[in-house]
Length: 171
Image (cartoon, rainbow, N blue to C red):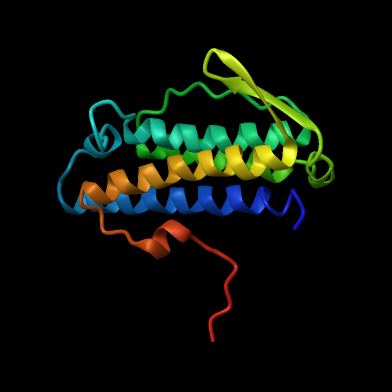
């Protein structure tokens, strides 16, 4: 499998699934007469980031990971989203960016060193290792945590919602 096939569609499908989770959260909040900001500020434990930040991080992992593999600087987003609509717009902007990434450049990144911020330090990994062991796992960590927060709050979502529009043939 090529580096581009292991990254671009993974980020795109995951982000679109996250956007669909936001739709379900919005519907749930309206049906239960819950202020949507309750869901957006929810967290699994006091020392964890809230739902909004999980969505922002998922977008950041997709755009930053993809950009680094493509050898370009990622765009910077403000992290100022306060509503479901604003989070959905951020996701859409991220999907649009990921779709512009040069697949050939990503495919050429397997053996290239990727350097990235890691707390107060800099991380260095071979491109294939960065994709497998950092970019994709971090992306799914935040998508999963966002899903878990909504489920914990009672939003009626399940595994199919998490998986999104995966390329599956059912017989």
